[in-house]
Length: 309
Ligand code: NAD
Image (tube, rainbow, N blue to C red; front, top):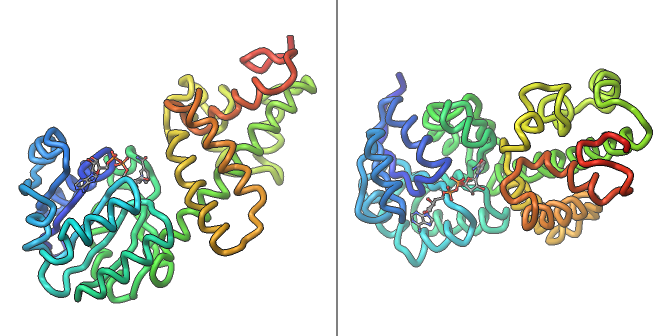
């Protein structure tokens, strides 16, 4: 086992709760805090020592991990809510939330200005990966700070990639998810087009999965039931990777594209498509449920299960 650390862990929600529990299992002392009392109680059941405030959780820590909804929460906590001021000099602040690249860079600056060390380290793998300890971390910051965090990241995940300097982890995350969002729409449109042409799902899958249309959205998270038995389409699109989270990540990618003047035509389009879907019928669905929205918007001769009438 690697040497144990004292970890302050702020944000014990769907992701943070099981991540903190896995740090405890790996032999680290974890002092946790969440605004929600029930989440603090659940974390305590998993062996996390709970603090009365975020600042208290950070005060004696070697490393402070945050797993919060958005950049504004991270920046408020670091600044006005006193987290940076409460920590010992040189504390490593690893933010694992998915936030705007610009916010991640601002967080790095705030951490450095307070005399600490920053790392952005968002994850992919979802709640299932957080529970199983199989997340992938993508990190931005100095190599020495990544090396310091790596044993902790690998106690919560199976892989940690150092992507570059400040914000590089967030950048990798949103670029990857922009590919994923666009490709899921592409695969879904292809299935609906195939349906209108009388092509079976199986035939299209058998061809595209071994031809140049091959991609994760098709071969792992296939948006129609049948070809990939484990995909969310086979359980009425229960997530999986929920559509609102895809909408959030595409929104972050769109922000970054606009800020950088990048002509990400399909990325911006995908962000709009998923924002509409997530606010409506897709709210509780896996992001592959977009196929149903595409089918519904198509010719009325298509039935909802995709067979031509
Ligand atoms: P969540 O809403 O379940 O958890 C966030 C927690 O932060 C909440 O419990 C909330 O009470 C707490 N919180 C907010 N402000 C706080 C404060 N000031 N002090 C203490 N606690 C505070 O969200 P989640 O699903 O765990 O996601 C967390 C992050 O991980 C998000 O940025 C999300 O985009 C990212 N992410 C989520 C998934 C997923 O599948 N859920 C996958 C990859 C990445």
